[in-house]
Amino acid sequence: MATPALELVVILASIGGLWIGARLLVEGASALAARLGVSRLVVGLTVVAFGTSMPEFAVTAEAALAGQGDIAVGNVVGSNVFNLGFVLGTTALLGTLDRTRRLVHRDGAALVLASAVLLVLLRDGRLTRPEGGLFLLGLVVYLSILIRSGTIATVAETVAPTRPLADAGRLLAGLVLVVGSARLLVESASTLAAAAGVSEWAIGVTVVAAGTSTPELVTAVVAARRGHSGLSVGSLLGSDLFNVLGVLGVAGLLGPLSVSPEAPRSVVWLLGTVLLVVTLLWTGRQLTRLEGAVLVVLAGIRWAVNLV
Image (tube, rainbow, N blue to C red; front, side):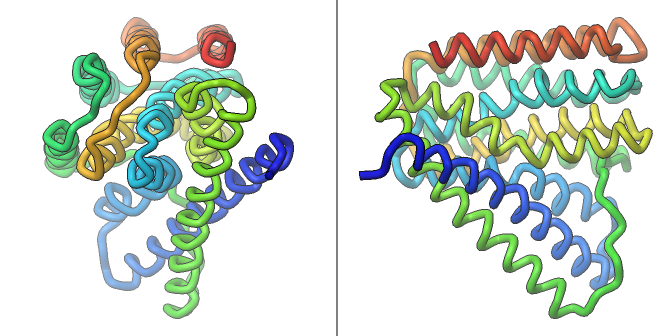
C-alpha cells in the first residue's frame, strides 16, 4: 500500500507533467494551426484558451468519469479562487497591473454571472447534465461575443518554424502527458485524502486546484514581466470563465455529479473573490501591489480554512 509521502511525490510529479504537457500541446497545436492558415484570433480563442485550461479539463473529466464529483467540481472552484487570489495577487506584486474598461465590463461581469449561477446550481449538492449543457451554451454565447468584438487576450509565444511532423509529435506528446498526469493526480489525490483524514472536496479545492493552475501562473507572470499587464488580467479572467462554462459544462454532461455539503460555502468564497477583484478593477485603472498582497493573503486564508 502506498504511503502518504509517496502519494504526495506522485501528485507533485503529476503537476509537473500537466504543466509540460500543456505547453507541448499549445505549442504543437499553434504551429499546426499557423501552417493551415488559421488566424491568430481563432488560435487564441481555441488552442491557447483551451490549452491553459487543459489541466483543469483533464483532471475534472477524469474525476467525473470516476464518479468523484468532489474532486471534479472542487478542482474548478479551487482553481478559480487560486487564479484570482494567489496568481493575480502575485502578478500584481511584480508590478502594478493596468486594466481596460472593456475587460471589467465584459469579462468581469460575465465571470460574476457564471459564478453566481454555479452557486445556485450547487445548492442541491448536484451538477446535472442539463446544467452542464447550460454552461456550455453560455460558453458558446461568450465566444460569439468575443468573435464579434474582434478581441482576444492571449500571451502565446511566437512558435519557431518546425517541420509538420515535429509539430504533430509535440501535440500528441502533450495530449498523452496531460491525460496520463491527470489520471495519476486524481488517483493519488483521492488516496491522500483518505490517508490524511480529510475530505476529497478539501483536497480537490486546494492541492489539486493549485496543481492544475500552474499554466495560468506561468502565463500570467511571463506576461506581466514582459510588460503585457493587461493580458495577465485578461487571461486569468478568461481562463476562470472557461473553467466554469467549458470544464464544468463537460463535467456535467459526463455526470450527473454529487458534491459535498462544503461545496456551496466554497463557491460563496469564489463569488466573493470575483466580486472583490472586479470591484478593485472597477474603482481604479490599476491593480496595485498593496491590493495584490491582499489577494494573496486571502488566498492563504482560504487554503487554511479548507484544510483545517
